[in-house]
Length: 246
Ligand code: 4GX
Image (cartoon, rainbow, N blue to C red; front, side):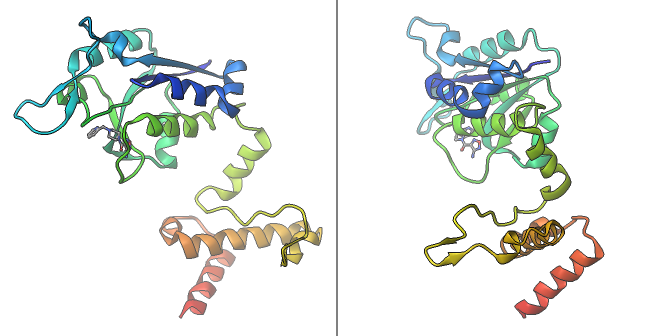
């Protein structure tokens, strides 16, 4: 079944262009993914197609009006079978690979991109299933966050990314940073590719890669090592890294 993504935004052009390019565009051609990008103004009720309004209680800035949002969400999700409505905002659950996998279970996703100071609270209460955040920083709108969410989920739809690559990820790198990568030439401006990679000894190469992945993770993202299942040898290796640090 084709995985469907709806994106509700005031700036559809850039979204469409991005989705048509690269891997995602190819997956659409293969009927693995379907994208529908909706202009929020098309659901406005007045002749000026107004979607924002001033704050009750006063204060700077504008908020997205509830009527166009409710109308859009209801219309878009009317033929959802198993779908979910997501609002992108810094108040949401932080996106990580676990959330990507959870969201990947839905047949349809509607991603709502807010601008201004956000959307009327009643829409969050009554029409949105879940808030998702890209991280603790403030964008100008939800569009980049929606694209990030879509792309992460799309990669796990079978056939979107080459099989060899995705299987490798599953069995090996999940939960760790990647080992260092090199391509030709053997020497570049005085920097050589590690000898082991030129040795042709695949067993040793695998071992080296696993250790380098562990080393990087230990140095750059030690938080990722918590709760990871490691072999005896790997735990010893991490212990050695700790010793050396002291
Ligand atoms: N991860 N933004 C939402 C409008 C807004 C403002 C306040 C609710 C409250 C973002 C992020 C993000 C910018 C999208 C502000 N909504 N989205 N927008 N970080 O920064 O997802």
